[in-house]
Amino acid sequence: MGRIVRTISKDASVVCSAIDGTDIVSEIERIHRTSAVVTAALGRLAMGTSLVGFGLKDEGDSVTLRVNGGGPIGSITAVSDYLGNVKCYCDNNIVEIPLRPDEMRPDEKLDVGGAVGNNGTLSVIKDLGLKEPYIGQTALVSGEIAEDITQYFAESEQTPTVCALGVLVNPDLTVKRAGGFLLQLLPFAPDESIDIIERNISKISSVTSLMERGISAEDIAMLTLNGLEPNVLDDFEVSYHCDCSKDRTERILRSLGEKELRELSQDETTEVKCHFCGKSYKFSSEEILSLIEK
Image (cartoon, rainbow, N blue to C red):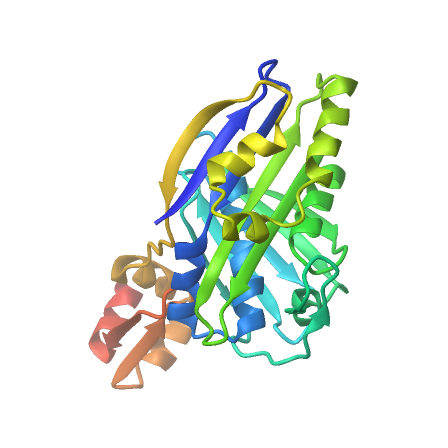
């Protein structure tokens, strides 16, 4: 299970949520059999989406983040519920590109931005139980995910935000560490708080380097608000969770319409595979025909 801890400054003007997503990203690698750079890209987007989803108010609310940067990974999508439980998928699970130099570490780094690309958009779709979902979209900054989420909140929601996300992948493609944080300032945040936040953030080299030193999600969230007398608001377990089912798959098939369903009914068996978890649902020709009646 992953873990999200949300902290708030004493004057309630700054909120930071931090996630230990190592188990979540490990599950992503297990389900999707991703190459190292795809694991890092999907992991970052999943954790970022989880942090955004954790800020939703009501049960049943959900948020989808979709990135299409024109890179070899294609489109990548993650969906979170209001508790931060998340699922994700991408067009291409295997991408092999050269590493890039890392100024913060003595070795080289997975080139997430190169895999994702930066010639495209980040779309945020919030389903809040209204007649139509809220949809916001901004141009990508780098394809590194965290910077793009930061830019989205600044441009589309006018909320000063700092997002940091990181995934360390072992040579055997398993996940060593994965985590991140999402810090947001409310409109009444005083200038002194902003100055303190800037100093705190400048001292954090990377989330994964902190985690390698044994620093927890709670400690990271408290570090970002150091000097602002922070307190812990929430502490929740979160996981990779797909809510697909045969009933939901039937509803999707019914939405295809009579013509397409009659074409599918020509096959003895129709198999539908979930993008998010890989589970398959099989429908006989008779079951497809019965969907037309429904």
